[in-house]
Amino acid sequence: MNEGHWHTPNPTTGSVPKPLAGRRVLVPRGGPWGDGVAARLRQLGAVPVIAPLINFAPTNDQATLDEALADLAAGAFDWLTLTSATTVDVLYAYKAEIPAETKVAVVGETTAAAMQAVGYRVDLVPERDNSAQGMAEQMIALETQPRKVLTLRSEIAKPVLTRLLIEAGHDVRSVVAYRTVGVPVTDKIATDVHSGRINAILVTSGSVAEQVVEQFPEIPASTVIAAIGPRTAKDAKRAGLGVDVVAETQTVDSLIDAVARFPLSIDESTP
Image: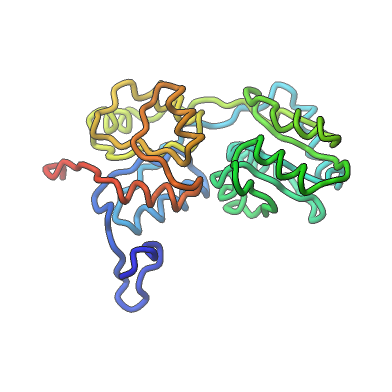
């Protein structure tokens, strides 16, 4: 069977290669995105363990966010930009309306996948440099006339995108959409990580990496830490987390592929 089609079971036999047979993989986000990742892992024989490590807390300036989302729904912006999947959770929680004429740009395939999972469309994902700076450069190249842009961000995000777009002459409203907070895992999951029963941990953002370091102070050397791209790997290392596997491209498929190709140890005596 062509291993390029791991995610498409044979309709006749139902068979699919199982490179992750019996491996337990921690998925650090829940919701529709986490469910989708878990389904792909199961197709490869893995046992997904969904353990959301981060969530969002309300912004300290709720009135400003409410006003921005109302203006968004009214068609006040030419572009909406998002730089994290958590911002998608905020949009979904607030039942935000994005008009057809408003284009949507996102950084990261995790963010794009999260948008699509809850029914929002995405018009632009940076092609070369999948970062806030890369997105700004691509938007500036696309839009030669001044445009109205709404940038939604976390309170800790550096306003790189906003600064570059303003310098290029665009009218940008930068709004803090949420505060990132850690979500404590259950005692069982913490024990499973520390004992080595979890064979791999997926790291999808710098915030997730920080929670992995904070909540799992003792991770066995045999546990594979897999980052969804070079930028996330860099953020993880800055947080003090060693990375074993880095996805070639910043996509869920690439991340799972990378884990599937890496030799994961497993305790065969584990029932």
